[in-house]
Image (spheres, rainbow, N blue to C red):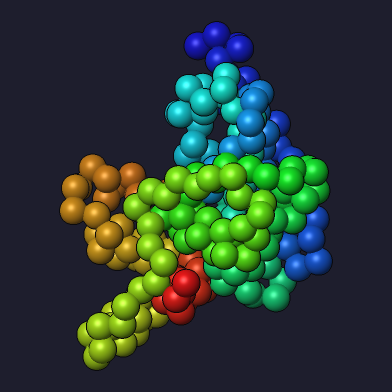
Length: 202
């Protein structure tokens, strides 16, 4: 692969140090800004396959949400979607970007919606992929599901990664990819992120 292509796929690491967390982000391309937010258990690296197709038209800001990728685990243990949205705001403020488009996948879509509610004047447009604004409780079954996740989490990230991947995806190939990515994460960070999502009601 040509060196220029590799540069597009692997932009330089940047960090913003906030009071309770260190946020990692990458910037590449030229044009109107586009913030790209990944899903749970993932990171900004997942966007690399598509960045070459977008970087000639947009300045891409790829952010690792707190507790994910190269961003740190928050010292205050706050994994709420609201705090993630405020982290994104802090990065944009640091970069001096008054308005931007935003692309959010799954958890990143939840953060995008929350950002739109909190800071509508900063959002030019948003693209939501496979996401939601709230999770409906399924009564006793929902309580049992949460208990089961907690019990599995006590056995480590490998067990939790398998459970989440099989629960979310029906295609065995996608399950394998999701499970492999989830295994890279801190088990407590994933459990607290899932807890934050379970309380989401935008």
